[in-house]
Length: 469
Image 1 (cartoon, rainbow, N blue to C red):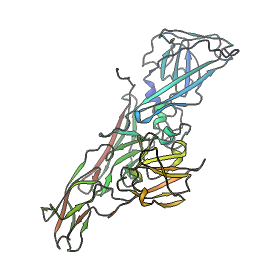
Image 2: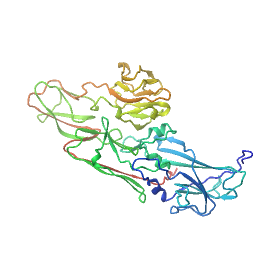
Image 3: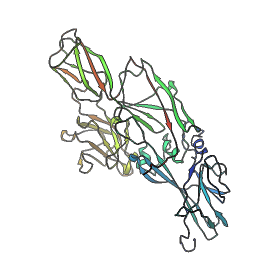
């Protein structure tokens, strides 16, 4: 009631997804911009009766609609695989008077055939009701969209939604290419920006000449990236630990549960009577068996624990939430403003090796390390490269806090690697002319001249059905 502020009536409704939602989600006309209105840009209301079915594209009796107001993040449990956004319109005292409201839905625009969800009004007991709107009434109509997805789970290949700006800073509306979550939640349409990156020592872009294609199928409800191939001579000696799509999806391999890949009879060198230290072609090597002239070396040899092939491990670290849940993969640069309260916390999967140095583009407000996310030890900090004192190198977590209202970019975190370029060490140098080979497994995809690498993916969308309890 506009005169007293009293809430005189409440109603609710569970929307069904209409078939045309999927087409509206994918209908972006721009090749890169995700700023076109999404399928939830309007809330429509009507006066009809009936049972909603997915093949409809309109209310039973359309009365009107308004553009949605602020999109409010209501749930951001990314580690549990759920995010939700609430939309709102307000029917003021001069609008929709003498209308008996019975149905509502989210729509792509104001036209009466653009409906994407449909619900009938019910009371808290599930009984069908109506609301009579008068000139003294103000009606708030809210619609909450829930997105359920596969979150990071150890021990399996899985996709991870990568959107730190969204999940940690819900007021941030990007104008970049990160349209994946926005499209599913109805804010924008999914854009056609076609790009993939490989996560290894850093992020590598797929060569532009390969022209990967992102395609949408609204009937099958799928998003697909066409197959991309690297032939025998491309990207060799390349540890692939993940693949990132610019629409906001990361597929993890090495640290996401990819089964160790066997490498057999790899030539790691020829003896010269002087050299004692050798290296496998790929990092993360474990279960290493070394042969000299086809004879297995049972003694007189030391093999380093699994480790990457580079000192800079930033792209292999994880942005985490305050509870330590590894939610997002890192990249070749981390901005503090991408994270909650201008503070990024990174988990170092190679903490047993230690972090010896980090590099930032500006002086942070605070830098600290921790093993439990509770007790933190402060580190000296300044713009540029900062060497970490030996006693602080093997902590699990690194925290970087940006100055108030200013950004800090973390561009590298170097590991404290001894014998960084080698991982196999003989007590005595193999004789001149000796053929040295190794069998091992690696927690990556080892791309070499003996293999091609093909990659494609298809994301299957659907209406979420809660599990039976």
